[in-house]
Image 1: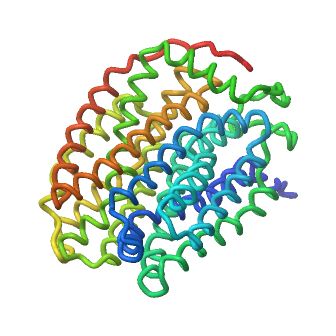
Image 2: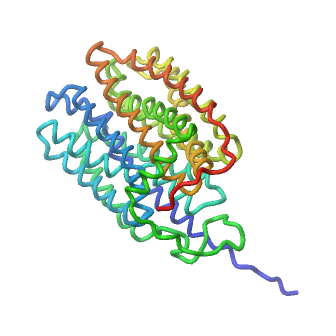
Image 3: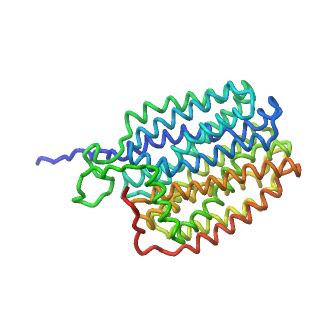
Length: 426
């Protein structure tokens, strides 16, 4: 009797695209992980106040967010591959440029403007674009995995940056980040494609019979981004998502991401130890975000957001009591709890944007993410000012806890969309 053998199923191209996108997001996260561990070295060498250094971080965070919707529109017009490769080059230029700076305005230019624009182009809207174009099935999980790339980049780069800053100086750390960003450019150019039709296929999990056709060409990237904003801003859902995500940014990148290391150092904890703890947040965040993506495919995203923000507020309210010169079990518990929640908010937020705004969902998410970074920028500067004026960060932690509760309420107030809001095609 002859036994018929079937060839093993071929790996869908979408998974290769997602893998390359993960690597690109990993590299772009490297310099974004740097501010928290470079504040003290820059303060010691140049004498710049923490508020001054934090202002450069704020510019970075603002541009990181504000450029995201325009980057999504540029990807519509020029392609994901070209925009992401250019963004990595700009990140490398900004990171390498810091080596030559001698004045605070140069810090703002390199660390704030160049890296802000570069990472803004590689922001979460990039992840949303890849997941939306290339996946129908498992879209929530893929969004979670790509979002976790930022945390994984933090995991890899943060301890390295901290050790290099201590042993070899912050300039060496900056050069390592620049080289890492440049090394990923060939991966992006060789692997990533803009649309499934470019390689003669459909998105992973697309219904049988789906036509293989390239998308209609998009023109006027700036006009499209602004038009989508104008229409989305007329809806209650957009503003509730924007408020919640602004608070998300304030309570993660802006406060914890920027000031956790110096706050721990204020209590006698070595800088490298504090950086290691923040890296562990990245470890647990990978698990939490991927699991959040899995849940998003199965549970109402509004409920997920409400729970995530409420739990975050609780953890931040307890944090000021946990700082000591050494790492106690209570701090380990915070790192685990907070890490699982760090960017678990992204998959349900992306899902709500696509559910409410359809094909324009990634661009709408870009604008919602811009609000995330505005919140982060405000918190980064405000927390630095609080530290300079009061001598500690306690007020910043408690204020963030209250804001997280507000974000929870806003998320639960979102109504379920019956059909996506129609938006302009160009």
